[in-house]
Image 1 (cartoon, rainbow, N blue to C red):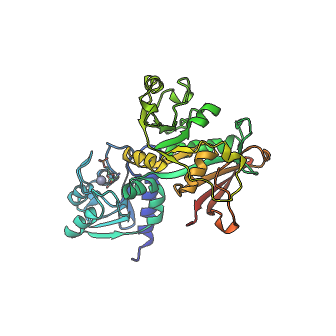
Image 2: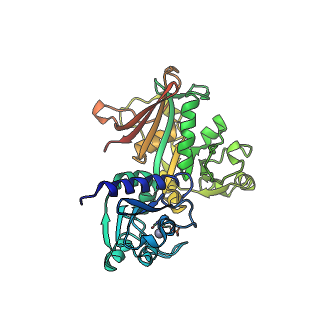
Image 3: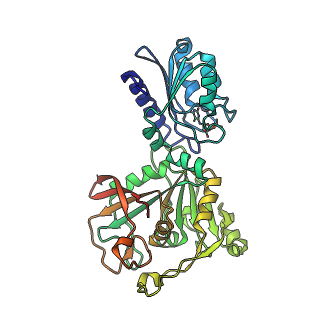
Amino acid sequence: MIYSDFDKSCMQRALELAERGLLTTDPNPRVGCVIGSDGVILGEGAHLRAGEPHAEPLALAAAGAAARGATAYVTLEPCNHHGRTPPCVDALLAAGVTRVVYALRDPNPRVDGSGAARLVAAGVRTECGLMEDAALVLNEGFVKRMRTGRPFVRLKTAASVDGRVALANGASQWITGEAARADVQAWRGRSSAILTTAATVIADDPRLDVRIAGASRQPLRVVLDRQLRMPPTARILNPPGKVLVFGSTDDVAGGHAATLRQRGAVVEAVAEVRAAPAGAGAPVQRNLAQLNLARLDLAQVLERLGSLQVNELLVESGGVLAGALLEQNLVDEWLLYLAPRLLGHDAQPLAVIQSLEQLTDARSFRIIDTAVLGDDLRLRLRPRAH
Ligand code: AOF
Ligand code: ZN
């Protein structure tokens, strides 16, 4: 498909509009729309909150009667279903647009090509794929959940250059500086949920909330706590925002679960699995001895979070959960903040994984981008196929 410069600038603008919903549309996708004709932008719209209008009717309303015969540029395939709002395809047809250019097919099974098919059937020129990658970047969580039922998993680690996330005595506040921590706030803000463990709650007592301008919602805070060890005084339990605690089947029926529920948490059971034993002959690492080898089933945790409409999940934990997620290929993206400091060999490692026999077995990552944040470095990594 050949697109004009005006087509491209309209879609670029629609992407900027979509980005306005970065902190607010959850669990809906971020979508922008521009109505354009003969080199002139006639109307703009952005979907900002689930339950509120989609991008297209807002842009059409702004364009008014001028929309007749114009082109609609949308970052996502227009919907064709009655959800919390009426179908956008109806609005586009009623307004008389004669061409629709959209970036990304809507993976929602209730749409998934049917919006485009109806536009085509009504005689509207319909084109897909302009700036598709940029539209996907805004909605990777939504797309992954719709396709797989699981959230997009983003692991965050703040480590020293020798790969340590806490001293042997647990002290970890703070390894990275203000700028890196402010950056984490932005990633939290766009996440549907934050995942951590009881070990981190006990060691650091984090709030794991979002404290940035423009965030109208708090992500769900999720704690993996197999034996329900977290204290009812933990700051993570403080409002606002919801807290979900996953424990083992036995523990969630007990008295401590009732106490956590009184503090407002939802406590649910997850199956347990045994961590794979170290390979025969592999040296037993000291840090492995710290591991409690029974663990909650992480795949089940992700399935459950997907069913709760979690699009983007940010994992903020120590090396045990990070290692388990990495070893089970459950991480989609890794934000690795590196502080130019040395914490020493007996400090806690950023990912507790099995010992390797040969270098070719090493898990490896692509660097998506890097950023210098104050005195620290941020690597954004994605796993290579293992
Ligand atoms: C569009 N334009 O701006 C958005 C779309 O029930 P609702 O109203 O909240 O609809 C949510 C679904 O609509 C969402 O899962 C996705 O498939 C689609 N989002 N579609 O044409 C928009 N936000
Ligand atoms: Zn719609």
